Every structure is written in structure tokens, then in C-alpha cells.
Length: 230
Ligand code: ADP
Ligand code: MG
Image 1: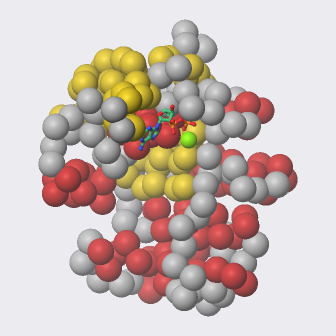
Image 2: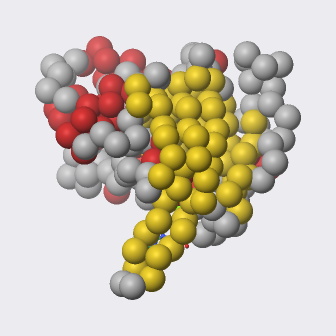
């Protein structure tokens, strides 16, 4: 089953009088449980695409379904509901709240979705991202890798089935970046669908499928060894 179904997606940004065609017709399907990497030069539209797939932004053209729901033209008030239910987002810059501990940062989305804050859920997530021993530390007391683990935990706490990550290892050394990929691989083993934008072509190939973007268009697909298409 496709959890992401995009057809002919375009995205035009307006910069003053200038139109920037960030995506020029991107079609792609991602299956449940698939691990996909998106690579491409800077400015090729990777972030634009991930923001559309994550319902953070709306396309200028084309169609997009998430878990069978057509989200193409939904207003923000509806997209936020889909985002909370279906999607966990991880960013290069971590975006942690500096005054909250690792555990409090992880639990924050539950406050936004008005769910009860649940200690055992916090422990489960801390274990999942390997941070039980850092639960009460503030972000400035953590390494880059640990901060990104917190951010991954925060993406998971509301129990989405799709995890989207935009250059999650961009600020990390290569050893830490590899460890981070290990976490994403574990998530895939647990049944999550994971889509990662990366500059690191070596790590990209640890996914089931590598998608290449250039000038807002997909380059021909590399073979897919995803679970439903071995
Ligand atoms: P990538 O993530 O692959 O580096 P982006 O998706 O961020 O690329 O950007 C694709 C193109 O869209 C670039 O030319 C970029 O300058 C442009 N762009 C991205 N966001 C905006 C914006 N908010 N306003 C205007 N142009 C933008
Ligand atoms: Mg980008």
C-alpha cells in the first residue's frame, strides 16, 4: 500500500516579481515500510519536496495523497491534523527548546495534540533513541548526535507512521551520522516508513531506494528493493 502518492507536483515560489520553479512535476509513490533517500545538488528542490510530503506546505500544482487521503488542497487547519496523526519531522537544525530537558522536548508534541503526558511513553521513546541516561539534560548539555536523537524522539512521540528527515546528519560528524542512520534503520524494521533527504551519498544507499532530484525534476529511478518490490 502507498502511504505517499504524489503525482506531477509543482512548487513555485515568488521572490519579488521573480518566479522560482522549485519543483517542476514530481511523481512518486512510497510504500508502507519503505526506506527512501532523496539526494540532489543544493537548490534542486529536496526541501521543497519534503515540505510538501510532510504537509508543511501546499503544492502549486499536481496531487498528493497521504495514507489514501487527498491532502493537495487542504487548508492549514486540516493539514495540521494530518501532520500530527501521520508524520514525524526531523530537521538538520534540531529545533529543540533550550529551556526544556531532553525528556520534556520529546514530550512536547503531546501537549500540542492535547494528549496526556505519559511517563512510560517518555521512557519507551528515550530507550528507542538511546537517551535514557540523558533524560533530564538540557540541550546545551548534549552533543550534536544526542540533540538529534532528542529531535527524532520528539518526531516519534505522537506515534506517526511516516518519518521525514531533512538532512538530519548535516550538522553531525560522519561517525555520528552513521549512528543516526542506524536509528532510522531500526525504525524501518519496526514498520515505520522513512524518507530522508541527505547530501551523503554513501549513507543514502543504506535506504531501499535512492531518489535523485535535479532542477526540480526526478532523475530516472534506481532499482527498488523495498519490501513489496524485491
Ligand atoms: P534544496 O533543499 O534541494 O537545497 P530547496 O527545496 O530549498 O532546495 O529550494 C529549491 C529552489 O527553490 C531553490 O532555487 C531555492 O532558492 C528556492 N526556494 C526555496 N524556498 C524558497 C522561498 N521560500 N522563496 C523563494 N524561493 C525559494
Ligand atoms: Mg534543503
